[in-house]
Length: 329
Image 1: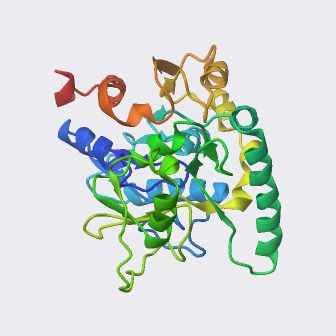
Image 2 (image 1 turned 90 degrees about the horizontal axis):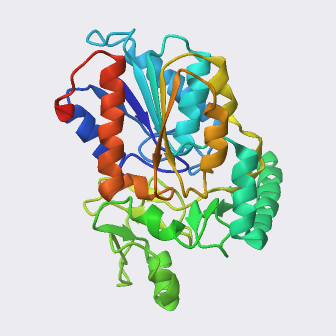
């Protein structure tokens, strides 16, 4: 059994389903979930990322799987990507019954990610932090969250900001995903930004009709998205208060506190989760296996890097569980 969780503000439909399908085709049982406050899960306010609560969601998923009659409680693996990759490392240090861990482009070190963020856009990083302070203070008085983009260009106050971040993140959404009218109208006035958004994303025409309600909550100029058939809602937005907590989160340190076999799939050109720091956390640890990929943070989800990563991950799990996966033949 493999439990899968996504990264910073992402929902299952952002290519996590592609991994789950490949694992299932290889004979694995897979549980995929959205974190509270995001996607199909409950939780208010929407688009809130609380690090402690997300780790609790992993523990809740583990507890649920262990109640299933068909589950072998001694053969459960955790699979996390990006921010979820950091979570699975931390959770493995808290639960010795986990049999294996796969962490893809894992966020392992808040200070390292902060330094990288400052290099890609120092002014926008400062704006992000200031907004985080105001959002935190506002939360004490019950104010609605200040929403800032999950991914954006270097000049946007985004949590992940680089010239390729907006294109990379939007490419994870399925073809036919539609932007809300407010964001669509903005992008029509900013063709240079529209050019950075994946062609998977379609703009919504302003026809005067009523826009369907979404589980995301209020609209945001950063992007509220709906699946082509209305099967999911997502947003390129997170509550700004997270900016004060990200630099303090260092799950990579937990690698030295457990001995569970762990595969780290590291993107060499990763600006969001710097590869050099992740490798330093893994250095000298016999239970940690590192695979390198010559790509950036979002490239590993698609194309040839996705294919190679899936093969490596299935082979690793097959080796740990003494199981011959169909895709490794």
